[in-house]
Image (cartoon, rainbow, N blue to C red):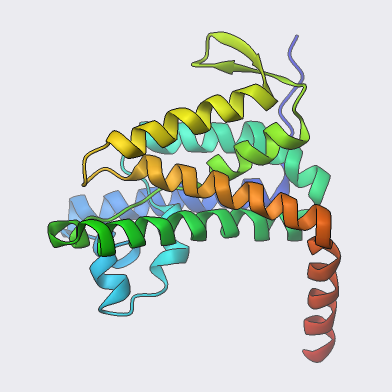
Length: 220
């Protein structure tokens, strides 16, 4: 029998937030005609020109359809909980939003300064950027564990992540202008790798803990 999946606290909260965001997003579109993607998805024109800066934090909690939501949450539960139990809630949360933010900024850069035009109005949604960052971390830390590539072929995690990175990179190079999701995935993986490298060399975990204690002490 397979061991039960351990659902960690922050992963559970993020999953619940994504499910609620999905229901509200599609419910508002269907029943009220309110297009929440333009308000809370990551839209280059809105973010850069209209200063909708909150979109960089809200876009991961919206998803295009049920399959998009299910795949993201399934992968996050599978790999995210192990990472949170290893790192703790604070470091895991910082890592998740670091990857999603970097993925979003790369998307904005490519759409706004490389392609422009109608691409400025194309929203990006989904937690995929953060989840690809988690995949990178999982492969680096739990490299000897076996994962199923394309749900069929067993492969060590340390090999899986680099094959995945290559596929996403090639997809981003040859993708259409309006489809830069693969580039955002690569951005999330790069952010995850850089985060882990800096953490190992400079002790980001210790720095975060000291900063959190200082903020908590000042708030009293």
